[in-house]
Length: 485
Ligand code: SAH
Ligand code: SF4
Ligand code: F3S
Image (cartoon, rainbow, N blue to C red; front, side, top):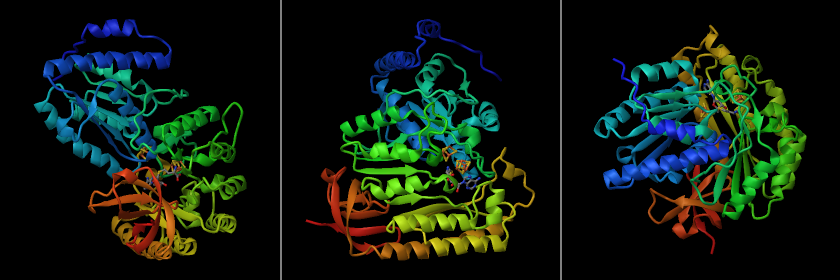
């Protein structure tokens, strides 16, 4: 049975008076939301709370900081859990099926919370919402969801929430694409001392298994001056480590009015005073230039860590994946990087069980892993994504074969990364302290330049500081250490 649409007349008034220009428009809607939040707080006699739940990659994490920025500016405080929240938003990921299932799994629970607290607002955004079949399912099965939007109109978040607050029906607005990059909206950073920074959005590569280009749209680079100004402001605010974000940072700047390479951008960023560590993600091997290797080699600020997803060690599988390099080219690239930056830490992503992967193809992957000897690897079981070319391929690999291969790969990966990490034992390295350790009482956790972590004795006054730590004991993917006096 469909609900009768009720629109609060206040909404017409709000919409009529909204400015056109995008940044002032969104500021205006944040203000309107703040007024509504204040009214509700008066009625309830308590503060309103919100919960932003993030799935997926660093891009989504950064988007969630923008969402929280808007909500806090509108007066919401962060809730400890969903049970105590008046506004819950899930920023979703759809790169693999299990990411989707997690969201559906939790939605049922959110529905039960909303029955107890009818004022609760539930919103969904992010990559999953860009898929039509997902939106259909939400319309049919999860009608209690108040607001649905996608990756392209996230900058309209405040406006969309106001629309949802003053209507009793599900507000669903998802755009297919955008050429807009809206700057200068509020952001709440998770860490005071480090931050992600988008340098580009979208992806043009269309790897045959991957849904990202369909849900994030075509490549759009931010202007270098906007990126640099953002970083300068962050540094003034106490940030010393940044992570430049893009699905394929190596193709940064190609479509700018005045084109610029990623290496050029990086080089400019190293000149910013007060910045200590620069990281970036992700590099596509096909676009990694000699110029970039040079810039990395010549700056102490750029972390000697490169995440270089290979996906498979079989040239034939790489061809069908549309990765545009062969096993040999990848290995040659690794040699070239190591020749110039010998102590570089390499990490990668691998997909097991891509359609048509034979035992021989898989052996090629194992062989490549043994040759490169990565410090760590994210291993994924191939997941069929509707709408991608690989989903239509007939030679899908049976589940039991895939899972046996996955386990075999994991054994090799773990052995190598343990051996690599073990080699660092006994050394004293500089780490950036990120947090107090929630499991080990009286310990803090710091991150090494190579992205590994170490737990050592200390208290929260160390958070955000760079400390020299001796790596006493290797525990697989982390260390136990002692701060050097
Ligand atoms: N832009 C990055 C990766 C983005 S997605 C790059 O090109 O390297 C992160 C990782 O998820 C990918 O590197 C890939 O290993 C994995 N992945 C993407 N689609 C997948 C799928 N359909 N099944 C399993 N893993 C997938
Ligand atoms: Fe997906 Fe390939 Fe783009 Fe990475 S480069 S986001 S794997 S299509
Ligand atoms: Fe997932 Fe979207 Fe990132 S699909 S991996 S959250 S770009």
